[in-house]
Length: 232
Image (tube, rainbow, N blue to C red; front, side, top):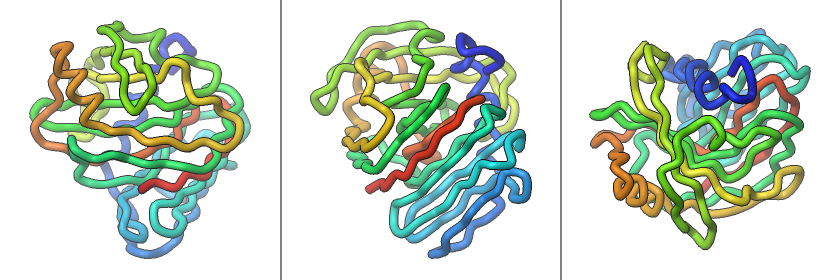
């Protein structure tokens, strides 16, 4: 993520820090200042959450709300962050619903995001994004229609990069909604993950047999923005 054209390759290197949980409190609300609070994963009001930042922008806050709700604000056009709520483990049979607001200014994603093991795969179903289209930095395999929308299907490789299992070489699988859901205000939708996973398999992109976490994540890179998303 040194440049917009390298976003898909470098953002994920930073996201690998998700693997170390530091706050697993149940049923509480967490406000994380990036300078003061370490990165963390845990359970909040029945949902798994994950929050990571590189610490470059002390203005960002991540807050776990009731049930599947979370809020994230960031500013300063400085640094890299990602946070969201969902489930651990993930599954290949879930329909994920999300609603709320998503207001990025600059480089950002709103996506279903997760990992598998055996094989180690990092995956995205990108519903909306800011100024950078992540499909520009990956190899297009084809298209798929899921939940009434068209998505570009893509893959990339990460070499000697951070992951949920430390430094590894692994593939990333992508579905990028085309056209994206319009950012800048209210947003909602549903993602039937089996539709994407089956399409990936048809293009020779096989996920691992063991699911790790699966969340609806907001990501920002040298940008500003805010999101308030409820997952179910």
